[in-house]
Length: 488
Image 1 (cartoon, one colour):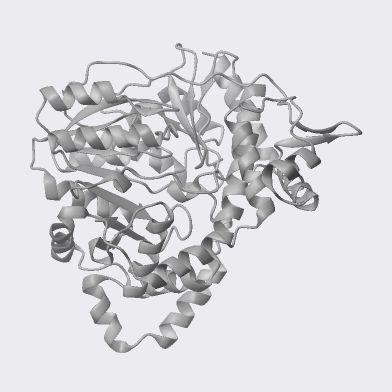
Image 2 (cartoon, one colour):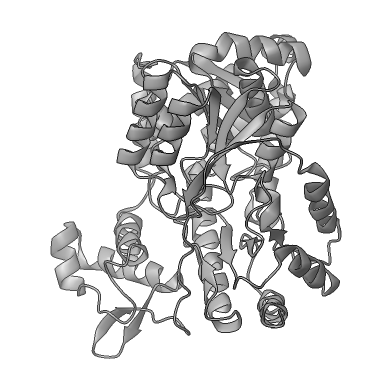
């Protein structure tokens, strides 16, 4: 797990880290102070001279950072007064709170409901607040196409067959390099390339469970998690999630001590649907619990690269000493949604996962693997990520501001530090399944709360996607939703 990678990786890591300009680092640090409410709306931020001394950069670098923060809509200049944190148009809505309940094993039966919701997304004229993906316009599809064409021209014929078993070696090296940036020294041999993250998650769960077993999941949980449990005839033990702090460790500890839980499936960073990111201390405490009970964890980390902070959040995998954590990732949410390339750093289960994949799908697309490897090495991935994160942060701010303008004041909403989902908790009388139908009749999709729970909880909640460019149509849709919500 902690074996050192070759020296050339250290050189590559340094090169990637240095691609971020100084003014961008300064801007990211100030943006984090604003997001964490250290700097509050209306407050004056440090003067250029003071910031220059504090950050050890030139005044011109500070000006560039402040121009970038203005462009992001986080600060504004006032004549002869300096720069101030931008005031929102309305008082921001409060955050939701975790729902505490007894974690009883539950049979899962949600697929019919989920498919009825997903079916609503096929109409391109529908406002895609219910979508699971950001806008395809945010991805470098033309540059990826060039990488695909280049690799198809130069790929040896033998690689078409050889790379089916182990995966493209250059892609595995590039993924191992990304792990290094998040503090995980990972041997390449631990990586299994899969058909997207969903195959990785499925294979991991099949390796450590049998029908009828108990699996600890989040509440609310990504609906695909529930569908996988339903297909494999597994029972869910739902652990509450706070929208800022993540899963309730006390509830998890009680469940592990009193129930025969065979595996945990959690998102420790930018959790879908609420957006929670656990602190490093809490992630370490989570791993200690897993190690104490020797319960494997499947870490679904497909949104890690979408953190608004300069560096991706550290995964639970980084604390793994026993190979208990199977860390699953994908390029579908941050780079190439249609390429269906994911992976798992499977720890002690790597051989089992690899063999199971060979017994089912054999291999993901070999040309797609090669194209992504070429792009990661030569295409400016980190530059793309900075642009993508900026777009998502701007769009999140726009949706939060629109919600404050149009939704009832008693509405609560999450404020994740990345990704493109917001979790809304409406007044108790709102039925989100009925809201879903009424909104759809107006050409607006959303993801109602009950599809995220084995127990059909969260009946007055919904997940909205802010991963599409904000337009007047988006604003009108939020106003329409506000009117419908107020009618309950």
